[in-house]
Image (cartoon, rainbow, N blue to C red):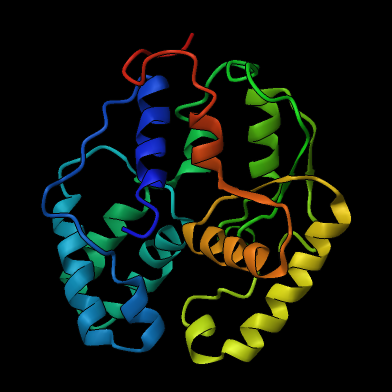
Length: 239
């Protein structure tokens, strides 16, 4: 609920790609914050609710790849001693996708279909867990370049954590601030105004760092950046 514009933008992009977007009424947090906090009992309760909510849908797509990591990896640990729920978690793994990978594959829009609009260059800061757990590589910048025909370059140390790090920013604020300072310095060195990343936590953290430093950076979630360039109604597929 901190960045409600992000899922709204993600839904608009999926509809533009021709997908039917369904948001189960019973869906809530996947359990990641509880996993990060070491509260396995609460995490298991939220994970069970998530598995129930998504039991009857074809694909599960989220603009928060940290949730994908939780569902693909964290659930197996949570349900190591509960075979029935572990099997349900396994059945989900083949259907859960982060937004960038889904728009790069099953819901791929035509090249240049979002090229209208600002042609200014952008810099990409990859979400570290997308790189380290999901093997995303250059997928984020490749997607933006493919759709928008703008100059896209990865930030120096783009695969390195921005300092948000789940509970790190709360439990170790000094460490988090030091990592963030390094990231903001790298952003300043690019001379590029628009910064794109793919995880809401990173967006919040980088925006805070930019504001505190006085940096003139426009930090956007990739869903926001792409959806703002849609030239058709959200329910009308492109191409």
